[in-house]
Amino acid sequence: MFQYKVIHNILPTKVSLFKAKITNNDICPQCLTDRHSLDHMLLHCSLTLSFWSLFRNWWVSKTKENILLSNSIILYGTFDNRKHKYSLNYALVAKYSIYSKCLHDEKLCFDSFLSFLMEKVNIQREIAIKNNKLNQFYETYRNLL
Ligand SMILES: [Zn+2]
Image 1 (cartoon, protein in one colour):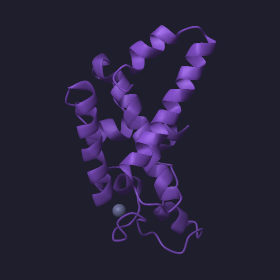
Image 2 (image 1 turned 90 degrees about the horizontal axis):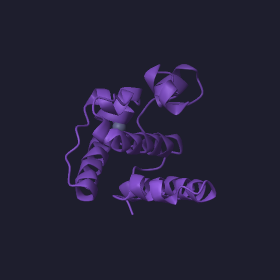
Image 3 (image 1 turned 120 degrees about the vertical axis):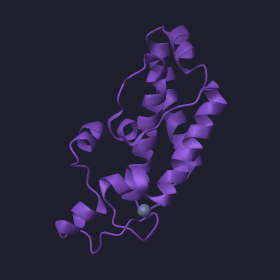
Image 4 (image 1 turned 30 degrees about the horizontal axis):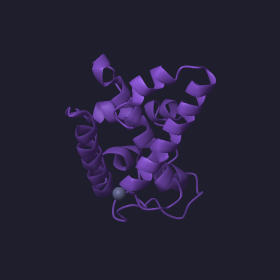
């Protein structure tokens, strides 16, 4: 549902909430300078740019592979290479983490993204244990563990 709202540009931001008179301003809660549109939140905010830079470095450290994070891939998660399918899932979790911080007026923090991601991975581990597919789990998440 989250990605559906991103694709259709209907994810609530300060801009849309301000237009609906739900908030009293449309300023980005991260940088406190620009308007908080979807593009600004996920692509152009100075703190988001730093976050994606940390994400790329983290990805390289885990996989020894560079990752292309174009605006299109960040927004729409285009699958053009099966090799990076899991990285795109991680980017989706990262994107949701960015949104969640903005929603709660909290500052972006890469470490909190990693904690959030590990919560999701641990849920996947529990599901794998229950379905007796722990080997597949370790194959899928070997770079993270
Ligand atoms: Zn901003």
